[in-house]
Image (cartoon, rainbow, N blue to C red; front, side, top):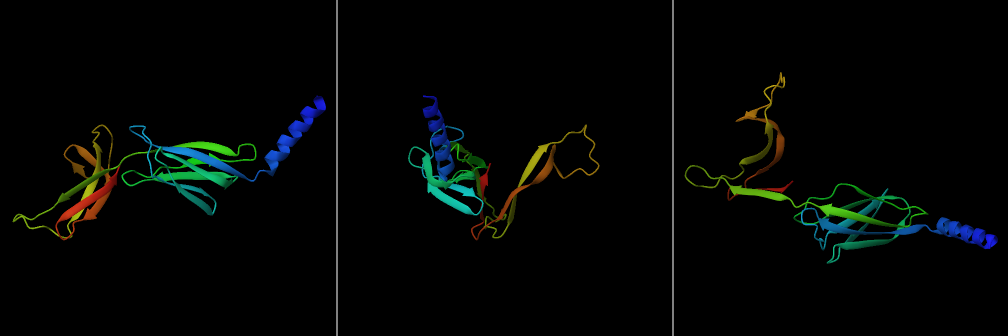
Length: 173
């Protein structure tokens, strides 16, 4: 019995060492509703190699035959912001990993700019500014621009109007 146990342990170690590929399973969910997202494009990348697939109608995906190493998993789908880094770590002792990816919907601001006569303004520059409440107690020798009682942090997004005076600022968090 003791010899059989040693043989079984040695066989398991030899099998783990012989395994050179693994499987990454996962799902993609809407961050707000927790509902599955179908047809999300999934990218699995390690070093110079990348693998691609799409999530099914239940938001599930799978990569098989994946080299045993650390992989970065990203997902994207129209209407959602791309994910930040999610990691899948495969090794001889862990050849199957489950990852969960959440995507956040993005917002779009669009509109039309016209002159005083109502004619569209083509090529007008449109900026979306990031603002924060101004803190009068904080010493700011070089205060940034102010809008009402708010301090300008940065230009968050920008664009130009088309020939119809229309603009669209997409992919807003």
